[in-house]
Structure formats: C-alpha cells, structure tokens
Length: 161
Image 1 (cartoon, rainbow, N blue to C red):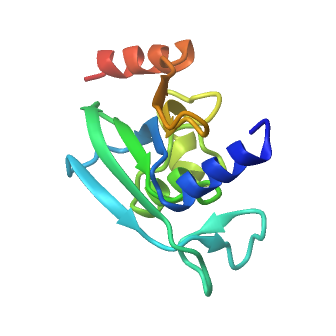
Image 2 (cartoon, rainbow, N blue to C red):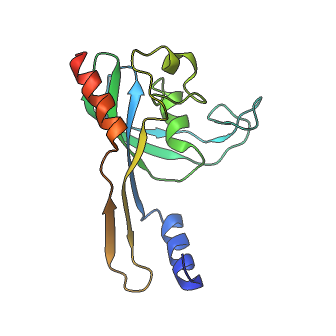
Image 3 (spheres, rainbow, N blue to C red):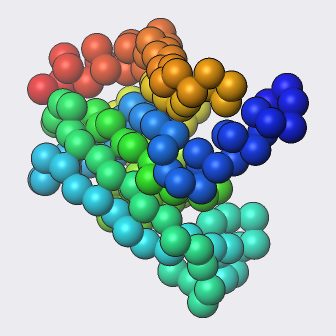
C-alpha cells in the first residue's frame, strides 16, 4: 500500500477474509474428489524450523478450498482458494492430503522428483486477486494468465492421458 489509509483498508479486508485469492496448481497424483476444503492449522515444522507443517504442537488457523479443473494419468490440475493466508499454505495443505505441488522440492519430497515431467519450479500460479479499492470501495479483480511453462506442462500431461 502506498499510504496508511490504504494499508489499513487492505489489512482489514485480509482480516475479514473478503480478499479473493485464487491459485492454479498442478499436483502430483490423481485426486479422487472433485472439490473440498482443507481446514488444518499450520505452524513451524517440529524438526525443520525452515518448513511449515500441519503436524505441529501449536499452529494458526488455515483454511484452503480446492476444485479439480482437469485430471491426467499422473497429476491433477486444481484451483485453490485461500480463506486464510499462512506461509506456504497451499503447498502445505495440498501436500498434507497427499497431493504435493509438482516441482515443490520442500513439501513434495520424492513423489515430486519421481514424476515423468519434472517441473523446474513449483507448478503454482497466482491467477486471481480481488479486493475492494481502499478509497473508492469499488471491487477490483485482477487476472493473470497461466505462464508458458505451466501451459507446456499441461500439454505434456494431456498427451499422457
């Protein structure tokens, strides 16, 4: 935010959970359910303080929802929507239910490395950001198209079907 009024407005919108944040991810494995909500607290990993985890002694509320956009033979294209905003939330949540983000070496482990298509980064893209303008109150929504490398990965996965 460029000024204190804008900062306060955006902070309030985050606290009230009115900011829309949608992500597109390619995850390892074929999701069985079409959609769902992951409601698991997130905190520092017990053994690795650089990582976040849902297996913790003390954490903070974290809620993410997802829906399947397309299934492939070894992966799934999903849309994830944040209800809260914790560090690495989408990556931690999806990994916690057995579907790590493709290319995520921190939370994906050997599952991600052993996939047929090795993604050179995390296959996670911030697709939509929506909020109310701090001064006018008008709802604004910004969309970002999938980057070329994710489109290429999807094309390769479609050919493997």
